[in-house]
Length: 313
Ligand SMILES: *[C@@H]1O[C@H](CO)[C@@H](O)[C@H](O)[C@H]1NC(C)=O
Ligand SMILES: *[C@@H]1O[C@H](CO)[C@@H](O)[C@H](O)[C@H]1NC(C)=O
Ligand SMILES: *[C@@H]1O[C@H](CO)[C@@H](O)[C@H](O)[C@H]1NC(C)=O
Ligand SMILES: [Zn+2]
Image 1 (cartoon, rainbow, N blue to C red):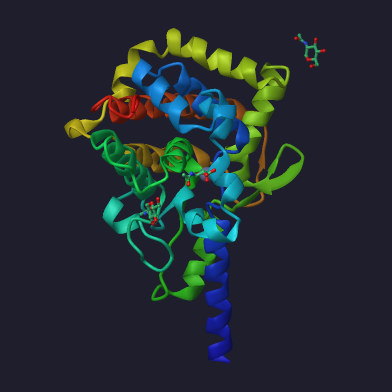
Image 2: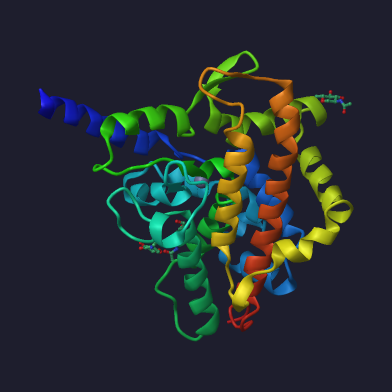
């Protein structure tokens, strides 16, 4: 009996691993982040992106930013599905790379921030040694980094789950029900999960309510805010400490903080989320999309301007 019970708990644990943080921004979110980034590319980045993307893209990164979501179900890409998120421990609204960045089998660096470092290094090493052919596929590296910088700005990609078999299974199960971002809620009249609210529904409701269901219009509105209200914040958003090329740890810490302050607040299982939640959380989602775009551009600009050898061979 005990054996069967522990098997059952084990399967709950495995199941949660699969459903928590399974996807982060939806297609619209990723398109928006990359489209905003494009407006802040330096010439060297424009050239590098044009060179790395397939010719059919005509240099438009945004149309390829959901590629990692499209392929992660294919058998040869299954291993990348853990790179879209990071799980942080229960009841601690913080994130630490060494503690949190691993997959369910404790393999280090397999999480969204680890992936951003990985693909930054691949693109960097290619910039530095442009004479040698890189043994990495840099087209993939560019599509991955562009996608994951979006994901790390989505608060729900920083799932609050505790996955540890030593932990009391029952406590784990309750904590999963109440804290995991798979919390079942109602978004107006539709039953959904809190995660889905944050990766899709808030954006979709905003599109319907304010932008006549036009994504380009929403992107234009965010671009206008970047030129006006947020313009003084941009240098701070772009900055990366200690002369590093990529700063995903900082973005992950912000995301978990926002998840605890705004996403989980007043969103217990079974709650109906309506106007109050939508109107107070939308500004957060909009700002995260804008920050994701600015930071993706800043990161690629830093990478490709190291030595402008990649642009011309
Ligand atoms: C880094 O990327 C390569 C493929 O380009 C992959 O084989 C490796 O597992 C990745 N490592 C991490 C930590 O993401
Ligand atoms: C690089 O990756 C892309 C996307 O997976 C693929 O279409 C392309 O053929 C790859 N290039 C090389 C040289 O393997
Ligand atoms: C909203 O979109 C519809 C269909 O795309 C279009 O017919 C209509 O003119 C648009 N309204 C405004 C105010 O732009
Ligand atoms: Zn993703």
